[in-house]
Image (cartoon, rainbow, N blue to C red):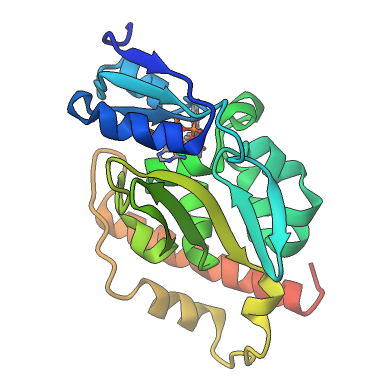
Length: 237
Ligand SMILES: Cc1cc2nc3c(=O)[nH]c(=O)nc-3n(C[C@H](O)[C@H](O)[C@H](O)COP(=O)(O)OP(=O)(O)OC[C@H]3O[C@@H](n4cnc5c(N)ncnc54)[C@H](O)[C@@H]3O)c2cc1C
């Protein structure tokens, strides 16, 4: 299918992009990053924005750098850049490991970290990593910039704390060693920790799997993840 008609702009500054979001609010504008989720939504007419604001030419939205102990990743940084980055591998190994599981190379060459987080698909890798690593997200709007912890940013399936006139500009992640520093070794077994970890979850069932199957899967994968982390901490794997 073809997308519904829309107007298009390719601003070069963040201020211009935010200004366009405000100016064309009645057209329910959307920003376009890598297009890997938004374009299919348009083609299937599941989204019908009257205005698309392409972020590709906006200066300063991509790149990976350190600010002190904090790793700062521009929202327009492509997933393939995360995959190849030595800085990400050292400071955010969970992100480096998870990003390789996203789709396949052409999708990762176009898809951005900001697009994945703003899309907030509950099955996606990068929102889960942002939650697990306690990342902060930076959003810019007409009133300026604000930092939003991942746990507040991700409100639910396909729902975020972004206002319609805000653009995600960067993701901050504390370096892994900082998170782990001083943490006591847990005596509890991985199985017990996994059981406690899924307590209170009540996943919905559908055609593909019952809620109970999903709960069992969550517990099993959590246990395996904890076992892997423990063995890595012991330098076994
Ligand atoms: C074949 C295929 C397989 C895939 N498999 C996986 C997978 O296994 N795992 C996975 O996690 N994902 C998967 N995806 C989704 C992919 O990761 C997308 O790239 C990602 O979800 C969106 O990133 P994007 O840069 O393409 O964003 P876009 O598609 O351009 O935008 C997505 C949404 O985010 C908004 N947005 C984008 N950037 C910003 C910003 N800076 N500020 C505010 N809002 C913004 C857009 O308005 C839109 O609503 C797959 C996609 C395809 C096509």
